[in-house]
Length: 249
Image 1 (cartoon, rainbow, N blue to C red):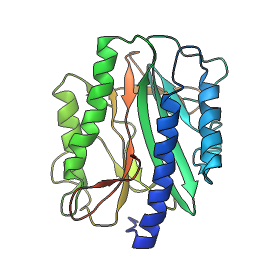
Image 2: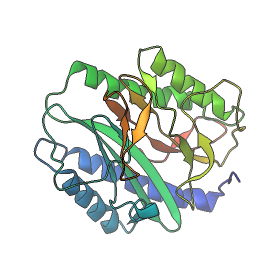
Image 3: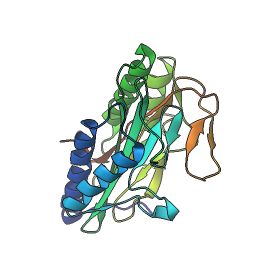
Image 4: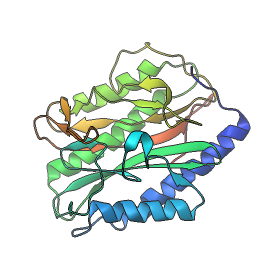
């Protein structure tokens, strides 16, 4: 069931979204050579708690971290580790969720570590730009497939690939609500967008093939061909005009 949020619920979601945005802004200052993904996780959790929220991902279906830290060829759901140390040339996506007053916010960014390749820089840039291309159609009266198609066309026209096995999602009182939101698809297909829908739009883009594999830990998801992957996500609100991004400050 797709849930339309009322004004009170939207106000609470703005608060959760702002917390996520602040955490991502903070952690960007710590992404550097020599830090462990465990330390990234600890810094994010501490800030989420200090802002009166709890980490949405911690213990979610058994996930051990407070945030997802996905390094290089890891697409999503990387588990923070004391032994995983960032080095110059790496790229890492940090996916943050915060739960406060009964509502979740969810967003991700991909960061560069030290001196990264021009190819990696372009991958990160294209992934972020594809999100903004997609949300041009995130307004009342369009359909979900219009967002998905715009993201896919933007990415593939530039020689990159869209991951098929994972999608964006509705969000609110539950971290994952209907509808599922693929980053590929046909114009005019899917659910009709209505005012009050809150959605997590999250392109996952690779520099090689789109095929992925889930490791035996049942979380860490890598590209099958070892190519780099980038992830960019925001929680948005559908309005009669432009979408409101709840996880940007």
